[in-house]
Image (spheres, rainbow, N blue to C red):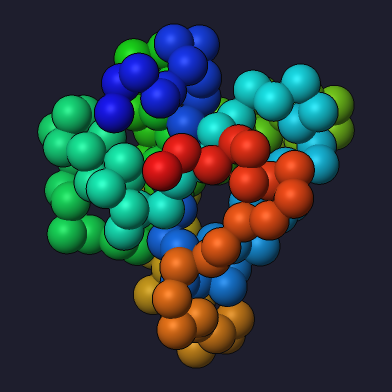
Length: 138
């Protein structure tokens, strides 16, 4: 697996059957023209291996995870880190890192707990196409 992952890659793991999570990937992709971010579903072999490698629960599939520079970020921390990495106006989320993590993650968990009801769920993991496909890890 390691030979497929560029050393300088920042990897976003997401729930591949969640419409909100897939939409987040579709949001990030065009705002990252330099290709900093790579993507993998939490359900994939790559996703499961990366979760295990970073001592994260492999059975909990309700979080966005960012792996960057040897560190792992989950839930609201991942969202803030990704937004900051995108730069521009998205960096405006960066001050939220000073809000206590317990508070941020409570809001995150509320949305995560309701995401299928509000945004729906796919029958199977998102299948990337076109330019997006080149940034997916298998």
